[in-house]
Image 1 (cartoon, rainbow, N blue to C red):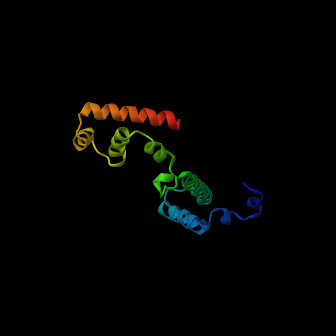
Image 2 (cartoon, helix red, strand yellow; image 1 turned 120 degrees about the vertical axis):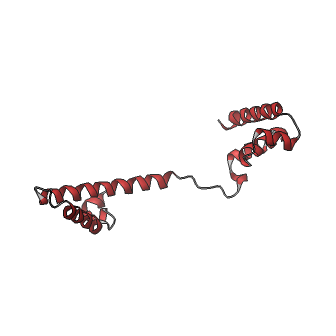
Length: 135
């Protein structure tokens, strides 16, 4: 909580959802009116729990939006793509076909005209070079 949070009223901190929360609480009281012994306490508890849920949801959405990676529009600007471009052609072609084109090992062997074992070894060696360069 910042210094301004103490001076603001609770509805401001709830992002304008206070009316919806209170309406939902009254709806729940109405639906369970036969089984509630103390409606005032039930209303107070329900509003409190709904406010907490709403604030928890807002916090989670904020955290998720902050951690999203921004897509790289130009792959040449990406560090990984630069490292891939520095690989020898045979390793680079296997890695691009496997991870950028989602080709299977068998498809890559057919496209490049080599054996499956050759594709696997080029893929392994290329990934090892990438790991050593990027880590």
